[in-house]
Image (tube, rainbow, N blue to C red; front, side, top):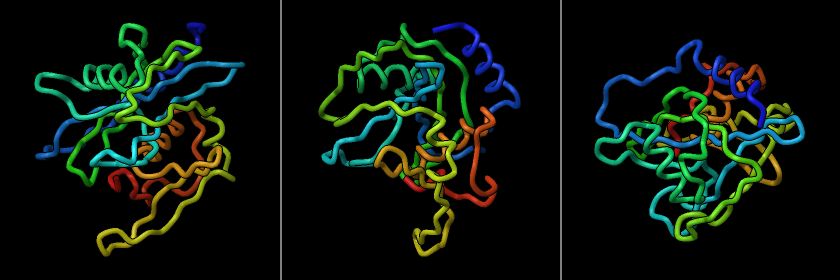
Length: 202
């Protein structure tokens, strides 16, 4: 892992500062957006959650969860990553944060972007996670992989982003986080951000 891409990403994530939601009763939470370089490309790591979980069952997501008392977003993201896929926080290089997003489940989530070791030696918590997989970020920047879909949620029509990558449909909060990351990297495609309303749908 060379240092140049790490420095560039840190700069891109610092300015402008990531947006934060206004005061609310939502529970703080965090996810880790893992990145690494292979063959000159940036890759990210996602998980598929177990169908047996009470919330977000079977969904594609980044490692993460609710903050414990006294935790900040990074502490929560690193702890959950180690619990879910076995990557120790000491091996993750902090790069920055993305815009905070809200979920229908009552969480406000800070995405923390970190460089992870490659190759990734995952030790999966099979009670929560059934799959860990990596995808190149450029796959999400391909306009052929992007669908902006109108759906009806709670009786209201909303426009959401769906990424069709490697036989998977990635949408909701995970798609919103990916979209924000691609915007920061100058790789965004699809309709204007202000027309989308997908950040809270999971």
